Length: 336
Ligand code: UDP
Image (cartoon, rainbow, N blue to C red):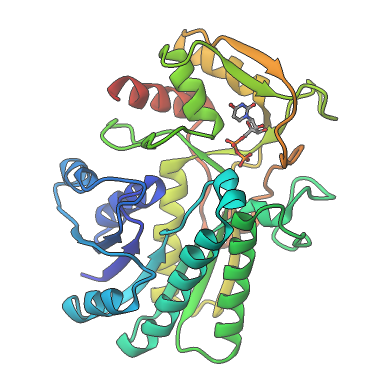
């Protein structure tokens, strides 16, 4: 059984990916500092898969602690690196925290990998690196634009660090996955996006409003240059997204793929904020009171993926409909 280290494995995408890795026969070691998740997730994963992943509470910015993990679990073949700070707004207020967390963690991992014979890294990047693309849908060859937040900048710098390390002849491969907007929860409703602190993302806000936790929600802007005036995104089911990580790891370990590859992970379909709210109402039968307010600073007007490369090269495709995905988010909200 192949051993994979999953950093940030109790987090939103990390926990779903751990489930898919285990289902595919990998042994998973989770490292997480629990800064934005909790240890109970380990038990929830075990409930879904029947296998309890190994769990070490540690911070990836602590190189000595990471080294201990590699010592304690010999033979780790691949790392999937999710652990990172991810709130755009917070990153503007605490840029140094973001640079330290997101950059030092990656450096530590890349420095340790060769010492332990780790063959590959799958890295969580984001479509935020494309800024507002000139051409839509956006493919992997699109120009990378100056970041609009420290968070976005850490993703760009991380990509550059990986590229430079690989080109310098590092003895490992990497696949960089550029996520569009992951939403939804596991169909078991055992795991999902945990609302620690105030959620900033659209779907958790929609489900909380539907549940009455909030009286109403705000739609940030209806005067964009889009058909209904609200912003457009590509919302991708979190389980579908997670499966791409398993395929990427298989590809690194079991094929003679290139040393460094990039893939967009999205559905290829753009949905506006207003369309998403209306689809949620239609698929759950629950009303979401909303009010249109001014634009949110820093928002991209419209972006959706050209996922052709992932479809063709990875043989991966978004399978779940947005309707089912929104229903899974609602089931998860009710569980909370
Ligand atoms: N959005 C909104 N109301 C909210 C939260 C988000 O209208 O309470 C909009 C936001 O302006 C953006 C879209 O929903 O156009 C997706 O926002 P999210 O923060 O989920 O993702 P990102 O902006 O990072 O793509």
